[in-house]
Length: 209
Image (cartoon, rainbow, N blue to C red; front, side, top):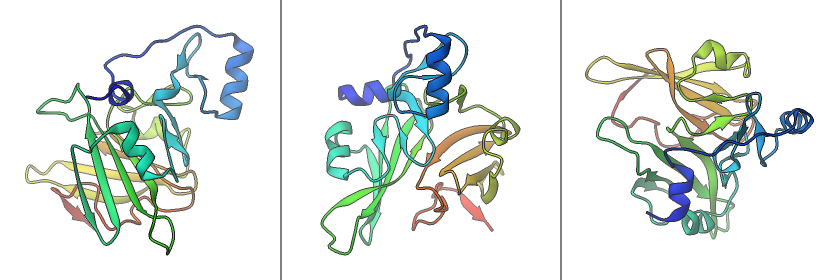
């Protein structure tokens, strides 16, 4: 698997110390560089989630040709009417859990020459938001950072498991919850609903209105 995929979905990340003043400024700026998450630790920019903007090195609005150069050929996906999902699986994926990066794209404009990134979805807890929030976090904890999170859809499988999708439309980030814990997050443009796409997030599950 190409180096960038290993960087994006590696089993471990390095943490280093930084000065308190730098941590405070980084959190205030919500920057794409190394950002403080907890005292004495930083998040590697390759794993940094910025609501409405980016996941790691993949940004909203990026040319899909450039994304393809970084990630290589997608392992799976779906496409129709100029819109597509491309899915890349990590080395740490298992039969029970597939760590993945999924990128939703469509044509940038009516010229239909360039497709750009509209949404980025990840399922690995290696990716973190400023303040150390990562997947596995509860809805209550995430609402402390994104108070406008609202349920927008619900999916049920044959075993009656339920996935709830909560979206912060204003901030540009959504979370999927299973049994009270977040299992995936999606970054999308600010003020654009996460479910404003032609594909469902869980095509193998039944969506419940």
